[in-house]
Image (cartoon, chains in turn green, orange):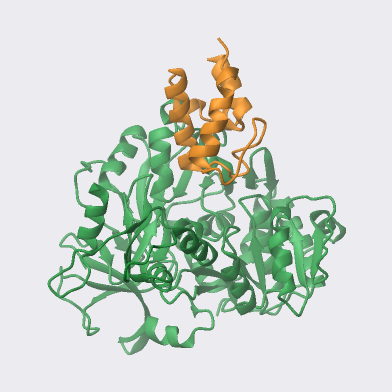
Amino acid sequence: MSNHLIQHNLARAADIAPQGIACKFLDTSLTYARFESKTNQLARLMLDLGVGRGHRVGIMTGRRLEVPIAVYAALKTGAAFIPLDPDMAFERLRELMTTCEIDVIISEQRMQVKLEQLAVTRTKPLHFIDCSDAESLVSAQSQLHCVVWSTVDQFSTLPVPEVNMRSSDDAYIMFTSGSTGVPKGIVHTHSSANAYARLTVDHYAITRHDVLGAHSPLHFDMSTMAFLSMPMAAGTAVIIPDVYTRLPASMSKIMQDDGITIWYSVPYAIIQLISRGALEARNLEKLRWVLYGGEPFSPHHIRKLMDSLPKVRVSNVYGPAETNQCTHYTVPGSLRGDEDAVPIGTFWDEARALIIDANDTPVEQGQLGELLVHSPAMMKGYFRQPELNLKCFYEKIDHGQPTIYYRTGDLATLGDDGLYYYSGRVDQQVKIRGNRIEINEIENIVLAHPGVQEAVAYAVDRGSENERLNVSIILSGERSFDEVSLRAVLASSVPPFAMPDRITVRPEFPRTTSGKVDRRLLSMQERIE
Amino acid sequence: MTYMNIKTNVLEFINREILNNLNTIEENQELLVSGILDSLSIMRVVSYLERETGITIPPIDIALENFSSVNAMCNYLDSK
């Protein structure tokens, strides 16, 4: 049984390509040799702070070079890392820190106030390692112990003594929206992470000469290609600074100047590049593959992408965060742009798929049903959610062996062409600019507000740059409605991308014959008004 | 022709239309790295400047050095 750990990939890269660039951020590069020694130093600092096997370390920063350093340092101590969105609402952050028992967090000086507020609520000290290069940090809050980044250099660069750990140990936990309002922590192990890395390195033929445009922030599971696949291949990950994700022409300049060969992002970022990124003014001859994932990309826009970058392969990456990428599909040059959808394609050889009906019975070929996936890259389960874990997995006996499948909640069909097609959700989950939102969660919060009788949340302008969430409500009685206080409640409970753009009051909603709200008609009506 | 005279108008536009007067920014204040202007806001400011000045701002010019502050925007417009 292999005991292949993620950090072994880094050690190997440092061995075979010590001067190869591991990661780059604006003008600063880190070679694999330097990356290896820096992570050793930071790991030793963490060990000094009491981090060890089975622990969890928080990483809460914007996009920067220190992110992959923090990732590999945590792994080397035997701990798992928890990516935390810096824009996360305070209550949600406090809950996650408590649930995950995080005592050490790598963060930035600009988050200090938030960290002090967190520290007040704790009985044990919170160790805050600041990676934003503050010269000194003082906290008025005695429970917050601040460590400046330069402290890392006081530690030895020698490899950390091997921790007695297994590839089945937790490596990282990605939290995502839950329908009851409780975030779900998707636990990936060294084993599932390495399986993902191997499958992608192999399929996309990633080599040490590849340079990835790493658009995704760490807390988004699309970051896995940057922190897992690239080190396995000893290739380079170019970290796109936060500000450039808002300036597509600057983003395309980085693609040119850093010789990016593979681009991987949500469709939203690609649409920005096509419409405002001045691609025609850039020399992108090194770019060989554009991968998109996180949500469907309209064939219309894919056609525009292929027209502006004719020499580049464009591929669909499908897979819930729970399973990592599980299918692959390269869009043929013959795509017209008026098709309904692009297939999610073919499952990895090592993966298995089932399409089942509401009774867990496999459907007939070509019929719609829920997609269930087994993959070596799939999660171990949700973090400390035994009831959810009973419901979200399905066990099937294949050739006398039990195989665990994950219930994706996605609807799919298997086409006559042998390709799989995605066809929406079983439930009310939507994505806004690639971020998962459980509609129920937003609606429940609005419903709890005084005077609100019914609430419907829906996405508008799907697939465009302006994709956003709106809410319509019916008030009980004649009460007027305090939008400011409702927005304040929402702001403290939901992520920024889930904040509704417009909240409209209606006397009634359009309904289906069974009395349920006709959501599609409602969102269409709201758009016209 | 100098565009420094529209500086007040630009400040007012951003403060009123984009920040909804919940925050007010000054002419020197950094707007991009700080995240004060997000993706959509940047586009709205560009549209506003184009309307105010009649200048067409090509996408390739929408970069950090030209839009990081209201001063930078006016310097950029002067250079066009």
